[in-house]
Figure 1 (cartoon, one colour):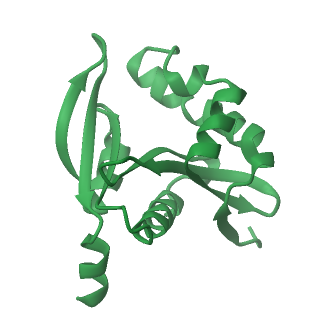
Figure 2: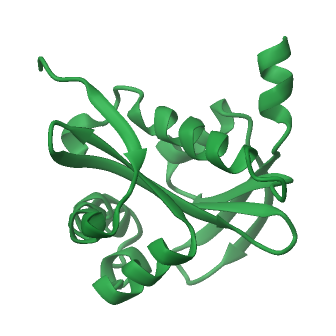
Length: 167
């Protein structure tokens, strides 16, 4: 490849690139569940811009191209809700998703209000579930959102990273 991947905070001008990448990345999830009306495929650019303004987002770039992204925000209870971890299909299986997850956790771990990390995925999304479990997340609840989809919410304490560093 010759170029290294860099991870940085997303800027407002990244919104269109993130939305296009999100649309590409969620095609496989839509196919897996037989539902192309899932929110990541119907989200508008204005909604995404609002989401980016409310929380924190990271992008991974290969040169100038946005090839991966993740975003999240902290609620009033101290839960850092991590969402829409996406990696371009040609860049998957190279550890980039794990790097982005570590980076967004590190950002929120620096927030005094962050007590826990939380994310969710569909029950058939084995690759996602395997990644999240390998990063210390455990299922805390499930919610059926339709006849074909059950969302699994996973969580871990924010201070888990500190324990891992001192071990």
